Amino acid sequence: MSSKHFSDLDSSALPNPIPTDVTPAPFDHLPSTTTSSTLSESEEIPCTSSSPSSTPPPIHLPLSWPPDATLSLQWIHHLIAAFDWSSKNLPPSHFPSVLPVSVFDTLILTASKILHKEPNCLKILQDSPPSSDSTVVVVGDIHGQFHDLLFLLQDAGFPSENRFFVFNGDYVDRGAWGLETFLLLLAWKVFMPHRVFLLRGNHESKYCTSVYGFEKEVLTKYGDRGKHVYRKCLGCFEGLPLASIIAGCVYTAHGGLFRSVSVPSSKRSKGKKNRRIILNPEAKGLSLGSLEELSKARRSVLDPPWEGLNLIPGDVLWSDPSMNPGLSPNRERGIGLLWGPDCTEEFLKKFDLKLIIRSHEGPDAREKRPGLAGMDQGYTIDHVVDSGKLITLFSAPDYPQFQATEERYKNKGAYIVLEPPNFDVPIIHSFEAITPRPKVKAYYDFEDVIDSDEELDLASMATEP
Ligand SMILES: [Mn+2]
Image 1 (cartoon, rainbow, N blue to C red):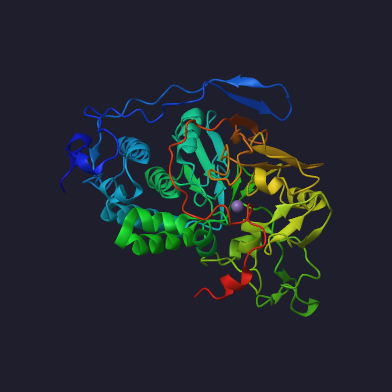
Image 2 (tube, rainbow, N blue to C red):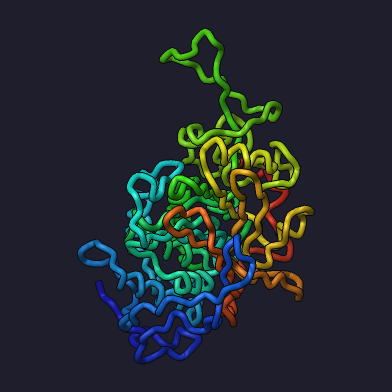
């Protein structure tokens, strides 16, 4: 395969001068500090960034798959530098000159094979005792804000033997670099499949990506091959696991808790091998689902259903916490549940957990949730109960990228670090958005599309093939 230095590219096609000697600096414009805090200490402690990783060598474009078919840290450095550079210097339609369809195909196929084999609920650091210096970084919604993700990775430190990452979904939509974001995370998954874990968000679906920009982004970036690329992305979304349990004590999922879809059958068949499961999908008699039920749910669906028998994936991806007790249908969203502090306590206690980390609500959503805190610091502590806590974590600062009003939320993003020995005291790092953000056009009509994901158009989902 032929490869070029940046300087070999056809400069007439490019809006900005081509750098001649490209030693990319993917982490320019970094804010100088972040803040971190633990739940037990309310004062803010300056967070020292880990030292920058070794400077990558000059990049050759287009990128090619490694000849020995094994991804390396250097390849990921190249991918980061190439995406960062192209996002600032190339029109979106030139994306195949950075990552050809053939390389995309190999990356997504390799990642999909790994992801599809993973269980619905990943057990992280559970089977073997973690080494004393293992940490886990948990990340919330990113929504195509690629440069903010680069900052987060630099600030938290890259995934490594001792640094696990759990991403809580919503990689794409709204922001202009969902493809770069998702592909970078897939590359990390392929490179370190037992250290990097990618959970599904509600936006990793056909419905959301057709409304909030990712489909159009892919069609714009890959032109006549765009439909093929989009289809492959949807197939990969279907394979993403739904939840994780970290060190036996922290449950993470994009939306959160979920209903039980089965009730124990009558005494007659109790204890028998052929014990029957009676499905109970009706809203009446809603009860909290178990981890066993979660493990049995069928997650390979383009749009998790809001009715019928397979409700657990939709709940896990779409539900929200509430200050009102009990479980109830999530009428604002049209899918999923609302659950109260009593449900958080029941879930934590039943499964011997200390913490729930969920995402899914940004500053726009929180504006409409009286009783729940705003998202200006990138996280909120929603429930504090006897057995532990429920935290909402949102990692897209200055969100959404495109807004119809001058006034912005100016929210920080945040990520959480869990440390040994117990992994149950979250250390929260809040960070500012990268400025300036490269100027690009939105891939959806952000002036018309509603702010948060409320009022899901169920009718249009129902007609999807
Ligand atoms: Mn979401």
